Image (cartoon, rainbow, N blue to C red; front, side):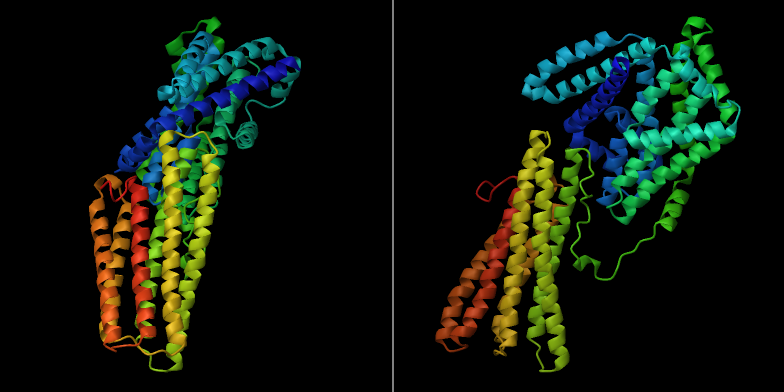
Length: 572
C-alpha cells in the first residue's frame, strides 16, 4: 500500500508541478501570449511555429488548445489560423515527453531542490513571485519524476509475475492488441485529463521491462486522441467556430493514428534503430533507451503528421464546416445569451478575463443598437397616421426595446457573477485591476440601457396618450442631441473593440462637452419658447426629459471610457 501511495503521490506531484508551471508562465506573459497568438498567425507556417513555441513554453497543450478555442470563440483568430496553432501545440507538447525521459533516466532531484530554494525566495519577493511560482512548479515536476523512477525501481515491475502475465496474455503480433492498448490510452487520458500523467505511467511500465515497447507506443497513440476531449469539452458551450476548431483538433489526431497504424511496426522499428545508433548498444542503457524511444516516437509521429496535414488546412476547414453547420436563428441577437463566456470551463483565470472582455464588447454594441431603436421609435411616433398598422409597428418596436432592457440587466448580472468567480483565483495585480475596471464598465453599460428605456417609455407615454406632436424645431433639436449621443456611443465601441493605446480619449470628452453645452442651450431656449406659447409646459417637460436623458447617457459613456482607459476626465 505504501508503494501504491508513493506512486499515486508522485503522479500528483508531476501533474500539479506542470499546472503550476503553466499557470505561472501565463500570468507572467498572459497579455504577450495573447498578442503573439493573434499577431503571429498570418499564415499556416507561422501559426504552426507559434503553437509549437507557446506550448513548449507553457508546458501544456491543453492550455494552448483551450486558449485557441477561446480566441476563435472571441473572434480573435480565424478557423484556419486556429487549426495551424493546434497542429503546433501537438508538436510543442512532445517536449514534456523528453523532460520525462531525462527524469526517468537520470537523478535530477538536486535540480528540484534548487528550484524549491530559489523559488520560495522569489515568491516572498513579491516583484518576482511569478518566476518563483514557475521554479516551484518545476521543482515539483522534477521531484515527481524522481519519486516515480525510485518507486518504479522499488516495485520491480519487470520481475513481478502478475504484471508480466497480464501483458503476456496479449498477443504481441496481433493488430487487436494494438487497438486495445490504443483504446486504454485514450480512456486513461480522458479520465485523468492529463496526457503527461499517462505518458509517465507508460514510461515507467516500458522502462521496467514489464510492458513491451509496441504496446507502450499504442498507449501513447491513445493519449493523443484522449487529450482532444479537453478542447471539445471547452467548446461545448462556445459558438460554432470554436466547436469547429475543437473538432479539427480531434480530426488531426485521429487522422495521424489511422495512418500510423498502417505502418506501425516499420515506423517503430525505424525509431528504435535511430535511438540505438544514437545511444549505443550497451545493455546497461536498456531502460534509458526504452523511455527515449517513447519520446522519440511521440515527437516523430507529431512532426510527420503536422508536415502532412499542414498542406490540407483549407480542406480540413471545409470538412469541419460541413460537419458542424452554422445555425444562426432569426432574431438570435434579441435572445439573452452570453456569446463568449464558456460556462466556466476555462482553466486559467488570465484567459477567462479575455472571454469577459469580449462579452463586454458585445454588451456595449448591443447598447448602441438599443439606442438606435429609440431613435427609430421617435421617428415612428412622429409619423402617426392613425392606422392600425402604425400602432402595431410602434408597439412591436417598443417591445423590442423593452426586451433589450431586460437583456442588459441579465448581462450585467451574469458577467459580474463570472468575474467574481474568476477573482476568487490567484491573479496577477494587472488582472485584478482589469476585473475592477470591467465591473465598473458593466454597471455603466447597464445604466445606458436604463437611459434608453427611459427615453422609450417617455416616447411611448406621449404616443399612447395621443398627445400632440413636437414642433418641427423640437424634433430637430432632439435628433441633433441624439446624433451627438450616438457619436459618443460609436467612440465608446471603437475603444471596446480596439487597443486603448491608439484611442484618442479627448475626442470622447469633447463630444461630452458638446452634449452638455447643447443641453444647457436647449434648457434655456425651452423656457423662452414656453413663455412665447410655442408649445405647452407639459409638452416642454416631455421634450426636456428626452434631452436630459441623452445627456445622462453621455455621462455613462464617459464613465465606461474612463474605466477602460484607467483615467478620469480631469486627468486627461
